[in-house]
Amino acid sequence: MDAASLEAAFRRAFGVFWGKGTIQEFYDFLDEQGFYTDEDTPFVLDKALFREHIDFHLGQWSMLEWIPREPKFDVFGTTGLVSTYFTLRGKPKGSGFRLRHGVCTVACHWDGTRWRAGMVNIDALIGHIVDASPG
Image (cartoon, rainbow, N blue to C red; front, side, top):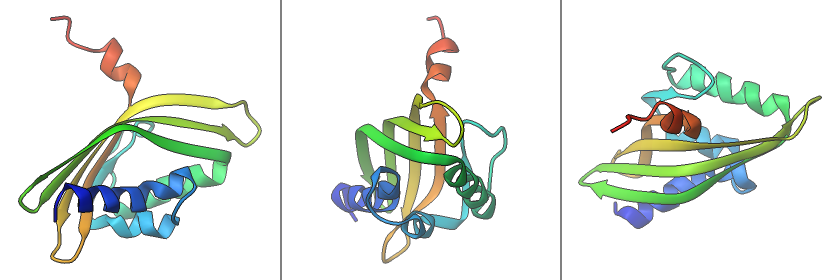
């Protein structure tokens, strides 16, 4: 229950998006009581809806990678926080190559045996630049 174990859990769960691990490991990392947001939906999603959202995307891409950049892992008692920039790159079926940069924050809790994500927020980096406070 330290930063190293949080990092290992995050990399195991999100590894499916850079060619390691399985989608089931990602879904197992998500807490049933959690809430999840993604840049391309205006709604807060529960686990079932987030899974449906991710499954939809996975079916629409012929190639997809989600690469974390400069991840930071912090642990405060039984709470873990992950923050990272990311690069999403891939090719939707029937369309051109895409490259998107963003920010991801994951709030985790230690359930007594493993880390679980109670909140995942995936956001486009442009929103942090364009709508940033001027002062």
